[in-house]
Image (cartoon, rainbow, N blue to C red; front, side, top):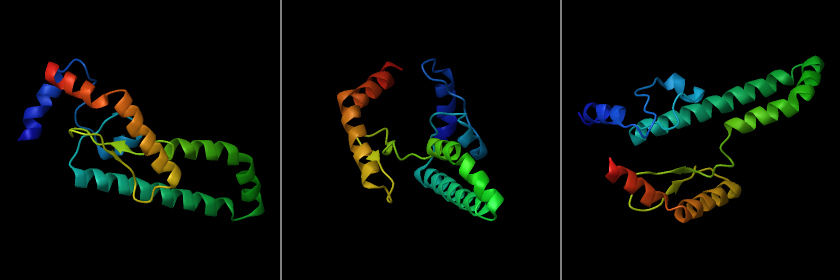
Length: 143
């Protein structure tokens, strides 16, 4: 019922680019910058994409090591492949901000490296300096 009541309100809001419901297959295409869902569903989506990307990367690496020809090809595409893979990794992001709270929380992955945790801390500092929570509150109240 909450979703049905909220949808038309978001659709009418001129301050955001509300696209409505999207299919899970459209998430990696960037059809939406923000996806709102229940926490369990969001976690399943994230874990699925992480597992799928890891499996695909492993399969590509194995394919590139099968023969001398594929190894040479792999060597030639390695710089471009590394850059492409980097675009899909969130290692330089730190974490995801949790919105709708009366405080500042950046959720980092349980297997985050020390560099990723450092980035999450920097995110918190930037969000605090930019008064992100206050800006969110102001915009919600204005609506």
